[in-house]
Length: 405
Image (cartoon, rainbow, N blue to C red; front, side, top):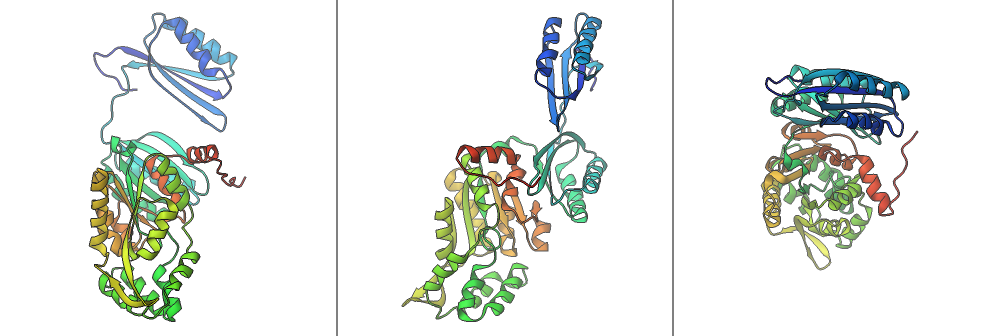
């Protein structure tokens, strides 16, 4: 309890014990009789155990109120504590949301992370579980630590503990609808489309090796793309349909898009791949914008060329800015998700850049990294719980598989 000179005295009442219907009503009935005002209130229930904290103004007869509340607590077989103080909780500056994703999440990892927060001068004001399956997601509301310093400290600990940690400043911006811009290959979908096309030309291994080097940032993207596409010369255009039929979305992709579209989020996909694939993905998923390279086709076959300018590293960032401007959304209200070196400018341009199962250089440059194989974990970074998503799906008649017992 913070004490502020010159502010009215207050009384903090904390009730703990087994939860049951009517607990809160019983306590507030006693408080109503005492004529106090409610200053603050918080309640949590964890596996049937309740913790209820009520901060009220100083009662006219504190002895009588303590006796009445004590008798009510005894009748409920609960424990009660009282603490006098002055005023409300002081507002804390430099607030952050710290989201921890574990697969699984061990007590050792939590001890290390919370220790780092304390070492950074942070205080954990509130803890909420966002999901328990297929990953455990916990959100900590932290005050007192600089978000940039906290992010730097926790990124080191995340790598050491094998968990993912996102640190975001606690601002009103987090609650607004946003534009989410995603890479496609190895982000929205599993694998690389160009390698699947290369299998039709008998050069999959060669293309895969060049792709890997380009994603690590070892090769100029445009140069490497044109070289790889050249190897596709003569592949029948029908191979595009065959490849599309074999594409697998990353787990959770549909859930993420479906859930966030309900909240007014808009989506774009920006790819160094090919519009013949990405345009169909956008239509299938209900994505608002798509930008990618166009394979040149003549006489029913790929020519080995690309029509127009290449969507490269700079082009991806430019697409994000253009889509945001068209929607009237600031760049600060955008989220970018990618895995390769050609996503770096896009991740930097976004308000929140997320490296998804990314190359090391991308993980180190992004605002945060997600290394679990579920794309819908992105929703937890926005403070949305899995229970909320499943409830909305249930209302829409969408059945969610039950988690293991």
